[in-house]
Length: 189
Image (cartoon, rainbow, N blue to C red):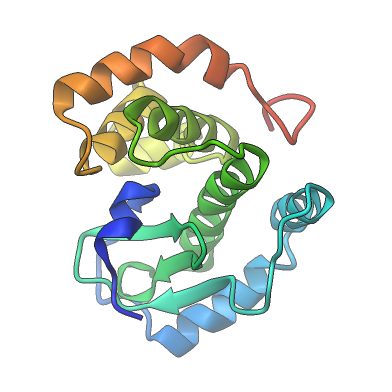
């Protein structure tokens, strides 16, 4: 499937991968390994308990032209950008991050990805709960400060409905509530 404008609107994870990337087949194999990790299994179970469907093709590898690692699109599932992945840990992180978006979409009947505050809230939760901002990952990226805020801004600003000012205002308005919302976890992992 070609990447469409909805991929950005529904939440995407920026790519920091260097190198040639994986083939779609290699990436699909890594996605299958991801599905066996404890965090992914837990998120999948929680989605199913919430009444969300998680079919065989819910997470798939695609070739992406944009510099993103992956994304979630309502009604289509999770795309992992194979050409921006190099190792299993990168695939795992994208899958976990995007599963948190999918969980949010499932549990919030009124979630509107065109609403900057809704998008910011899901990005805050995904950044905080997925491990994206673990200090080792940040160090390897060359950053060490305000990871979640930086990544939320980058993602929400990529939403065609959110200007930089709207993204910043939305993030600040929902920060405390969304950062402290750790569902489906008892606490931040």
